[in-house]
Image (tube, rainbow, N blue to C red; front, side, top):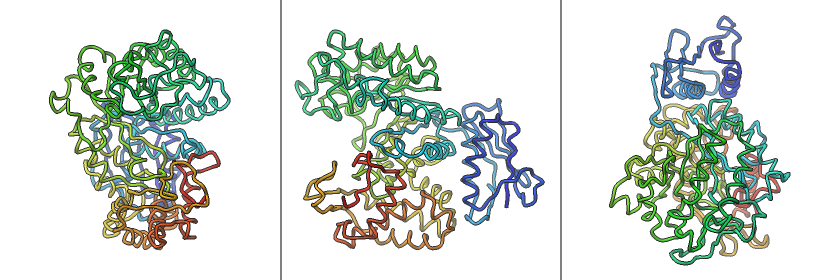
Length: 563
C-alpha cells in the first residue's frame, strides 16, 4: 500500500521535513509513498494545510473517503497533527493499515511542552551523528513538543574561542536550528553564576558550608563567581554576553536562570543563595537576555532550594510577590516525591505566579544512567505529579539520552492533556512503536510497565557504588531491589522478539526494552554479576553502540561492561 501526501499548501522546507519524518515511520511499517493520488497502489491520501483561522496550537483530522484532511494552526502543530494521525491509525508493521475512525479536534492543555537535551559527558546528544539526533527531534515534534532546551556548560573552557568550545557551540546551534525548522522553539538554561575555567580567582564564589548551609552545593566547580564581591556581577554578565553572542540569530523563545547544580555561593553576603545572592544577578541577567533575545520569556528556576540551606523556600516566598520577580514569566520547580514546600501549604500559591516542571526522567533509581537499556519511570512520574497537586503548567523533562524515550512521551502527553495516567500513555506508545493491537498490546504494555519494578539498582565493585571507573580487578555487581518481574518481562519480550516484523523489532525503540529485559534476566541468573554472562556482555555492548558511546563518554552514561 502507498500513501500520497498533498503538501501543496505547506511551505517547501516544512513540507520536505514532514515528508522525511513520514517516510521514516511509514517505510518501517511496510507503507510506501506515492507521487500522486493516481499512482498504482495508492490507497490513501493525506491533505495538509496550515489554517490561519486556527489558534492556540489547535489541529484537526477530518477523515474523508480514501483519506484525511490534516489542518493545524502552525508548523509545529502540523507535525503534532500528523503524529496524532499515526497514533490513531493501526499498523501491523507488514503493510496493513486502518485509518483513524473518527474526526479529531484538539487544542493542547499547556502551551509549554518542552524537552531538555543534556549535551555533556559525551552522551547520545553529545556524540551521536547529527542525523540521528535530528530523528529524535522529529519524533518529539510528532508528539507535540514545541520547545527544545539546551545548555552551554562554560566551566570546561577558558573562553568561547577555545577549539572545544567552538565544537560544542556548533553542535548546540545545529540542534536548535533543526528544531526551529520543525517549528519547535529554542530555549536555553544557564547557571546564574557559572563561569569559564580561568575566571578571576579573587572574584570566585564560596562553596564550603557555613551559616545556614549544612552541605556543599552539588556540582560546584570552584570557578563560579560571587555577585557580592566588587566586580563579580560585572564579570558574570560579561562572560554571559560572550556566550549569548554565539546564539543571537537563533529562534530562542525561553531562557531559564538557574540557582544550583552547578552554581551558588555560600558567603555571608550571598546567603541564602536562592533568596539573596541568586536574585542579585537577576536584573542584569534579565536586561542582557532581552537585549539578545527580545521575544524570549524568562524562567526562574528554584532547583535544589532547601537541599543545602535551611529555609530557602521560606525566605524566597515573599520575593515572589514583592516585585523582585517582575519580568519573570515562569517559576520552574521540582519537588521530586516530597510534595509542595511547607510554606506553600501554610500560605498557598502566590497569586500571579505560574509554575512549570523539570521532571527527572533519566537518572532516578539507576546508575549508570541508561546503563542497562530502557529506563521506564511511569509509577515515579505519576507519584511526583500527584504530590505536586496540579501546580505545573508544562515543563522541560531532563533527558540524558534516548534510553528514556518512553518517559519523554509520558511527559509530553501529560502536558498536552492527552493522558493524565502514565499507563495510558505507555499503552499508546507501545501501540505506535511496536505495531500491536488487542491481546498483544495488553501483554506488551504490561511488560513495559513492569520493567520499572527492577529499575531501582546500584552498580557496585567491592561494595562501593560505581560512579567513576573503579579498579578492573574487582568484579562488578548489580544490586537490584526487586527482581519479582524480571523473568516475566523477559518472557514477554523474548516472545515478541521472535514474532514482530523485522523492521519493528530491530528498531531501537523496541530493541532497548528487549535488551534491558535480557540483561536483567542474565544478571539474576548469574548471582548479580553481569561479567559472568557472555549474553549480558554482548547486550551491554549493543546498548553502548545504540548510545554511541566512545572513548570520551563519561562512566555515568556508559553501560557497565566488565572493564
